[in-house]
Image (tube, rainbow, N blue to C red; front, side, top):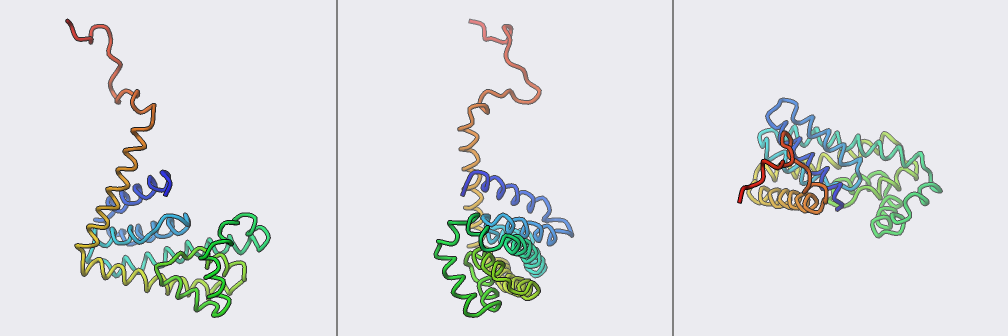
Length: 214
């Protein structure tokens, strides 16, 4: 994961923490789900568990709204990939078409169609290759959206229920993940040559009268 992704993920965690006490918290989680889906690289699972741990009594609404947000984000990606078409897709994403996930997705979707997309969306596996293949294969948009939403709803409901019913192991995982992100950001700040020479707000460099006397 790049430093940019770690920074974004930490920012999303902070946004969840700030909004945990508000009535709109499930909608905030839905927005985070949509954003991480559009990123195609930031996993939402840890953020979902963190949201449930912040508001365990609302795990059902969190799971429901986050599945809608993720489905909308996936639909946007579907339309983008659909617009690209085969030729531009292969030029834009050469590594994807050579990956194992792409071969698995093409095999599943080629054999079973939209139901396979529902299963993939419900499993803890990468969704983007299957979504790409579904888009350039021109599967029906309404069926794709329904499959994405149902698959995400099943997966997120299970995650949310587990986090609310058995919080201890999830708390440790989220804490470890958050600690890793903060450590990475601290290393980045330490490596920034300009950060060590910037004066704190409201202060000025020491003048001659500020120097310690012998």
